[in-house]
Length: 218
Length: 218
DNA sequence: CCCCCAAGCTAACCGCCGTTAGGCGACGAC
DNA sequence: GTCGTCGCCTAACGGCGGTTAGCTTGGGGG
Image (cartoon, rainbow over all chains, first blue to last red; front, side, top):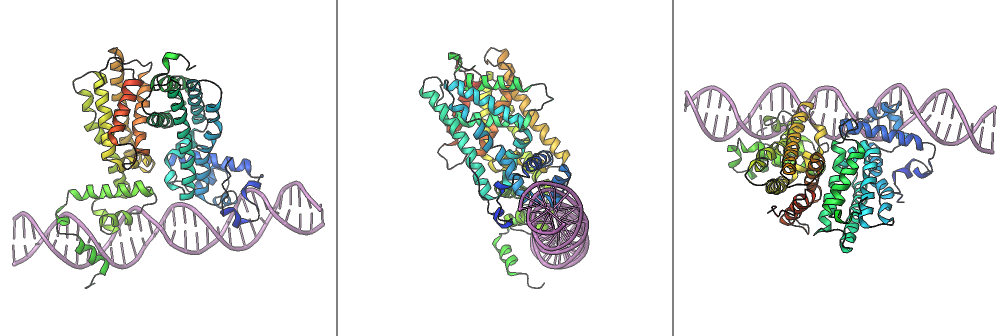
């Protein structure tokens, strides 16, 4: 939806990023490889040459796809803020009770967290390295997500389905608990993704929000 | 060199004699100043000269107190992992029901989070910059804390006071929700610390752990 | 009274890393 | 065919920043 018109693309040629369709797959490849490296060693400890090596090219060649190192980080951060907004938030607009919709959001959030695991690790920890403008965009996306969560919680409270004194606090607790998962979840751990999804839907919807008595969590 | 630069002489004159005698407190002063700077600009973007300027000395002089920049970061990380272990975990050994003990831990945790706010911001986000050995120590402290939380949750479940299917998941959710607070809490916000403490004790102990029915949370 | 050490300073090094300049082969369009 | 341009290359710059070396000073213990 939101197409951030970066001024840096104007200096390069009369061809903005949006029309560069050739390198689209390449861009995603670079972003993903960079995310993996950043997640393992930290953004600051990884050089452009390292990122380039991860995709089999030379460091300077990266500048044919991205204007700067920070732009790569920005792309990573967008996939963990903008993408959930586009994929998960529609679940809150789907038909059903607030409990059902929150449950669907929790599941969708965790599946996205799992699918883009390395990107989330980077996007949660390396925000300080972003340009102030990019940081503002990312923060806006995240704030909007939290606000939508808060709104659906408040709606559930008004409908008598949820029972929490403060929808704001509950929304914060929910979002923090969900996002924190990416810090400890491992594919090879004792807990499978589905077990975590079921457990967190129960914890969040059934217990924290107090919707267990209506039995509408499934 | 008979006449030093005006700037350094001004700094020297601005520092009373008290600075000279503080051999022990100087480290803490540096750590706190560094934490504030790291929290605002990010560890990588802050140079030793910046940290030094924050305490009124020159960059090279920092090496009389710390062996490296990473050692300062390590000290910060210890105050947000080792210190909670020493201050908060004893609350779990105090007399009382599991619900009361968890409630006390939540309060203690949030108060420490507030007292060492900048240190927590750094300690949560800059772990990647630590030496592998230091990183291991910090991770050990954090794992131990989480394990103690899990154990008291499990104890409450065995005592019939809590009602959660998986103590591990509940402990993760609790710790993540608590630590996440430092990312959004502001002293000048609408929510005061005490309101957050009360709200989270209710959310975590009363609702997530299901101890509301026994009325033992206070 | 003298010596030593803690704590600070200036100067400088040096290696890393983001970034730029300019060239070269391949390939699709005309 | 030829032309442009896309993607990649090599070479190199520029400087930032952590770290070291060596000096000065002031205060406290012997």
